Length: 404
Image (cartoon, rainbow, N blue to C red; front, top):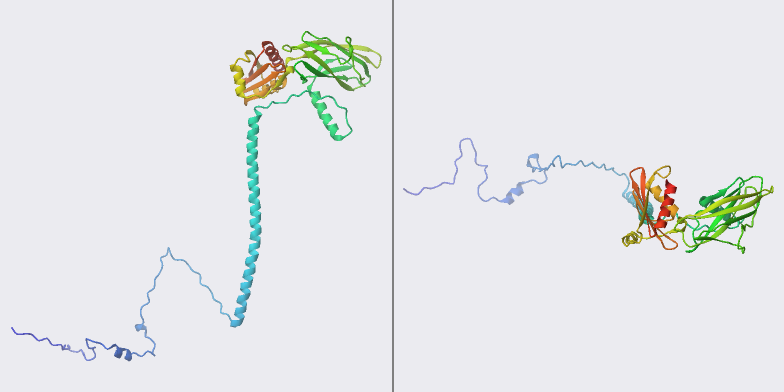
């Protein structure tokens, strides 16, 4: 079979004119561009499609449209207005900075005061904690020897101090004897000046509103362990006082004693003689008691030292009693307070509302340890350990008489 020839001429179907069809093959772009009239506007069908992107509803944010006011001013006037705006903005910025600086200063001062107050509160808490710790080693009430009487001065400050001392003295006074005209009291808080001497203040008071008292004298008999030391040169006979008492007046003096032992309470008999302004002579007999507690002083020690005293049997003698709560003495705290004031012992250790441990020593070196422990809700147990049996018995007897 021979070769087939392919014709490039396309026969047009009926009804179609192919004379206007472009020639396939190479196209002259220059000729096409030259045929376009660029002066005419682009037709709607000749424009390219614009691609528009729309955000999702979750991402869409409404942007307010800015309304631009058309300025009718000239450009020179607009430039001047812009300069004025810049100046006013600068002034407002400086004005805002000033109060902020003041505010920062005030806030810094406030923070400093807060820091100071917090630090002061912390120091107060620490001081209160230290005071609470130290309180366990402090006596309920400090016992001191009475001050010597002083003459009243005209100044107000001295008058106030003398009033305070007189009130303290009256609180510590204990009645020795009394009749219809004269009352005699002694200071129960007197303490020894050394291991063998003690001075006791004594107060004479005229209780009558009409008669005066004069020629007051007293005589005290000593015992084997305690002797009355006279202030005058007289070897025997009564001791005369140097004052008289007007109606309602009082005055005081001091009586000194020398003692060898106080393991038991010392009871010294005596008598007072005086004369009324009516001429009547009167006499009062009395017994001056010097309790063993008068010779004990509180001493601050640690719990370890107190435990060593018990371990080494330095306080082997035990005396005890049971105290029922009544009146103001309604718990173990009040019991311990009363014991501390009575026999002059210091608190060594305590558990509030439960137990108190106290310690004291005599002027001659005796050890005295006391424990007050609650027993139920109505009573407390008192245990007293001492280096001397007679002294311990005498002290526990004083406690029992006071709190029974």
